[in-house]
Image (cartoon, rainbow, N blue to C red; front, side):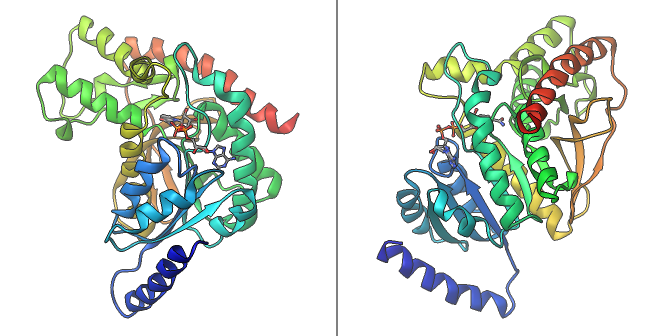
Length: 338
Ligand code: NAI
């Protein structure tokens, strides 16, 4: 480590000792892909989270700079940087929560599945490290295609004998964040007062907003339902096109990732009634993985909620979603089993 970071670590250790005397304990969190478009704002927001005591920032490029920068923020978490495969194990050891935004993002005209060839290998390598160094950590997987990378992670963990479905969560929170925003716009409400369950998966038609279950209860015209469903399903593409080759959603994704990670940490702390949508191992449908509301607790996913009553529009959407999801899940599983 450069001298300035060694200093930071020294100070951090003293601070950690002070904390042990009575202040609230925090969690140890690692971000893998921390120097990327999502990783950087995510690292900044996690450094601001009072539940985090130690923040490890790992990437294959540029992590020392990001670490030096973030470490100057006068918040509680101690920040340490890790660069390249040789430092992966140190980055992972002792962590409670691993957030993974490592991998390439989409460019205009690409689907999330087009990222499979590169990102599948990255996720595999990182998960092998997790199985070895922090098999009990909660994993929040952001790297696309989430519909395939979560099954990849599960297969890697199974192979290593460390798989616990409660601790592996694909992050679909951005779909919920977008749905809350777009629905609030249509209803003329504050988005903070709106909650839209979004189930299925995280790509195109697999993103299934349940507009019949919006809170507060409301109704939509057929035209509004078509508009909202299409906009929520294609929110990511809207950003990819607006960025015109410079990547996909990073800032709203970092916001969503932190909202989700914070929920996981509050669950780990033992808070009651923490419910968010995530793509997890599931028996809600016949598919082995599915996104729906889950209750988060000390062991990760403590309960997977059923979908609740669907209307005809949503039932049709569900069938379409399941068809595409089945293929994406199988693709992920085969990548490891082949
Ligand atoms: P980016 O290209 O800006 O950053 C990715 C970072 O990952 C880079 O810093 C890169 O060096 C790093 N990386 C590459 N290989 C690595 C490895 N083996 N180990 C550790 N780090 C590695 O991409 P961006 O925009 O941050 O997106 C990251 C991923 O998140 C993409 O796959 C993207 O599709 C996905 N994403 C997921 C969303 C979701 O809702 N789940 C929403 C938006 C993006």
